[in-house]
Length: 78
Image (cartoon, rainbow, N blue to C red; front, side, top):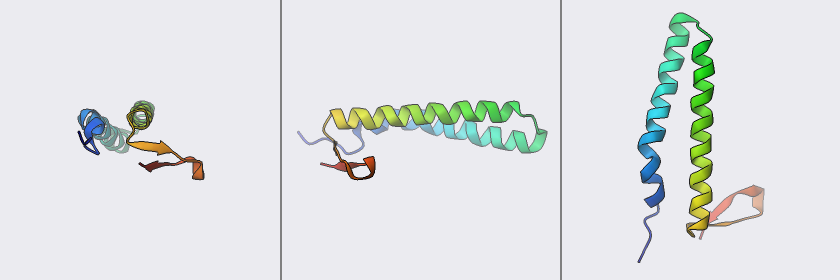
């Protein structure tokens, strides 16, 4: 059975898209209002995206989508 290259990523695409939209809203509101609270929230959204993407990458390695490489600490398709 062949794995789809984006099988795992599809599950999280909507969540990541929503977080990106929230970042855009924070950017817009910060420009309009100047309230630093929007930048604090924006930073939280960015951290959440980074956590999700890191988790996806680790899981893809576990599932055999990629193999670990020593070159610049990047992963290569298997």
